[in-house]
Image (cartoon, rainbow, N blue to C red; front, side, top):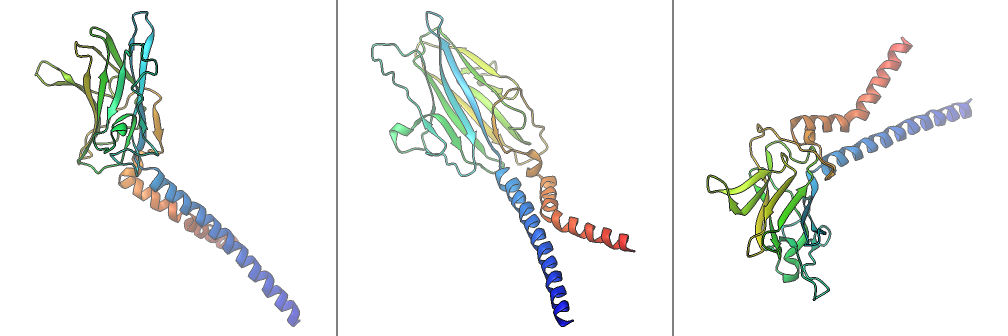
Length: 260
């Protein structure tokens, strides 16, 4: 009889261990999802811009630029995210019709001060992140077109993504600027110098009452969810973390009621 009781106790213990193991596994899974939602859902995105003109034969000449935000990136050159520009033509006899690049004056090395891709780090509300763009070597009178795609969700609450032409003023004698979520392109005519200075800025208001606007397109966006940046997101994260415990409790209560 004693042996039978021992065997029975071992079986019960095994069952408890199995249930505890399953619960722990389930809890670890939800904890892992909790970490993914709270850390991977940081405001990280990339937006491509195409700067183009046409040759005398009608051939399209263009450069691709990329700006973006990534947690862990810096304002200097980052090997992981940034790409230096290739502004020289290997054929010295051919005329370069277009040089478009992002200026990175925060970098000490001269060969890394001109970029085709410049990813900046995340910043708190009340600050502005800016990218300076230079468009050079375009013959006078040629039209230059800048195209971009801003997918829905890139610009959060209280944020504005603006493109400013530093070499052209409006009726109020201020640099021409536009909300990049409202338009998808900007065209200007190259001047005699062939150089044009533009800037792209992401401003973050401390107030979250401003309504964010969204544009159309298929730009690159990475794990960004507006809801997880406000109070509702924090509540959802806490619920997600403790969901396994809640489910186990509900299951036990259901079993008790059925046994009664």
